[in-house]
Image (cartoon, rainbow, N blue to C red):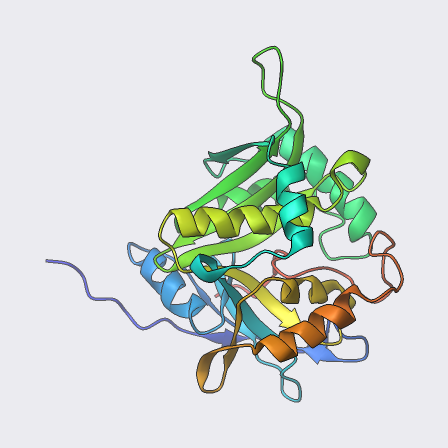
Amino acid sequence: MTAPIRFPRFFVTSPAPCPYLPGKSERKVFTELKGGHADQLNEALGRIGFRRSQTVAYRPSCIDCQACVSVRVVSDEFKPSSTQKRLMKRNKDLVVTECRPWATDEQFELLAKYLSARHPDGGMAAMDELDYADMVEHTPVTSYVVEYREPSENGEPGRLVGACLTDRQGDGLSMIYSFYDPDHEARAGLGNFIILDHIVRAAEQGLPYVYLGYWVEGSPRMQYKVRYRPLERLTREGWQRMSDEEQSELIAEATAPKNSLDEPIKGARGKDGQPVKFPAT
């Protein structure tokens, strides 16, 4: 006889400085993912805006702010822009491999390079090899690391230029954390390409969505997520598709000339999906 699924116990963190909006504080509600039904629980919570960090599922529960909005791309209806088409064509030679969730020195070296360039003040900047191994390997659900390598001429694995820790859910792929070589001039836009590749992979696997985590209006680091059409966001009434008009306005704002994203933004101390430290349950 199959054991019944027990309703999870939820906990709330103490308020802490918000990593996305300066001057704001954040609070999270979380629960532990464990046991034989961890995949089902993670999928159910993912549909109502939770994200996974190692063995914990969490979502914002801020008292006076609802800026963090869960968003997902509808993979089988995705229509790439001309810029996105060029980016996919430019990187079509990359060798993409789904690897088991096992941390490697090569992955960690790439992560450290990425964090130093893009998130030097973030909560992950001080991560060591063991912290990275915990992030990747401590998973109670169906996960893998997608590696992006340049082609090799001698049969050996090519240069690793990108990677993404990904959960496979019943209705889509959830991108937990991606990183890439920020200094590869010949492959500008690798972060966007990794998202595009996940959208294509989800559609090929018959999975309707790619979960991108939280979109935070007013946070420069989060605006790249509005560039993928069609986009759905989680509201009090459930998942709703963003209108073409609104999304076009947001894309125009996100792509307007401003400080380069290659420069660290003061006050933007991390990005969605970073490991979260919670009190012991």
